[in-house]
Image 1 (tube, helix red, strand yellow):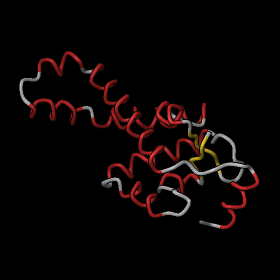
Image 2: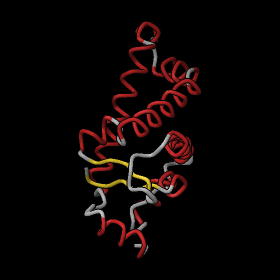
Image 3: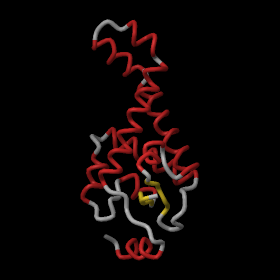
Length: 149
């Protein structure tokens, strides 16, 4: 891990969130957002007769779903330092420079790069598994860390 990050974490008496906690927070957020999409499109999903029709319906609202994900991530990270999944797992996002909750620009940057990383076969998330500071692409781009709350 970067010596500067180690020093900051030590000085602030913080520890990095484990991969397991981050993965569980991610899973909770994805299930919540998927549930919201299904609720929003409920009647249409009920009318779909085949799996192919459900896939076509989901693909029709792809851009809206991505926008919802970006807004959800940016809003909660900016407002609370964590999404609902992260809150449940008792972890939070902090800016490296200030060790505080990210501002609106940082949170928006992080959420956009996060969605791009998802669309690129989750490569940015895999990067975080190999990074000593557990920083994914969206963390590196926004200069953030995910720490235990």
